[in-house]
Amino acid sequence: MTWTDGTNMGYTKEFVGPGSQNSFTITFPVEQRPRYDSVVTTIEKSFKPGDVDNSH
Image 1 (cartoon, rainbow, N blue to C red):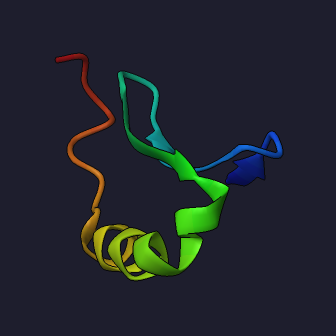
Image 2 (cartoon, helix red, strand yellow; image 1 turned 180 degrees about the vertical axis):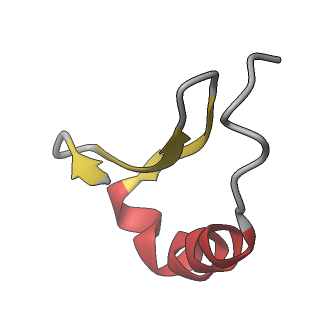
């Protein structure tokens, strides 16, 4: 999910299972989006869910 409040922009990715959830969120100033787009893309591509079937 991507959002903006006019000043800041954020991105969240979340995996939800019956026992737990794994997520990451990045928030940054809207004017710095060109700088952060590649960071968000790199993290998003490598972010994999752990064992969300069991509680941790």
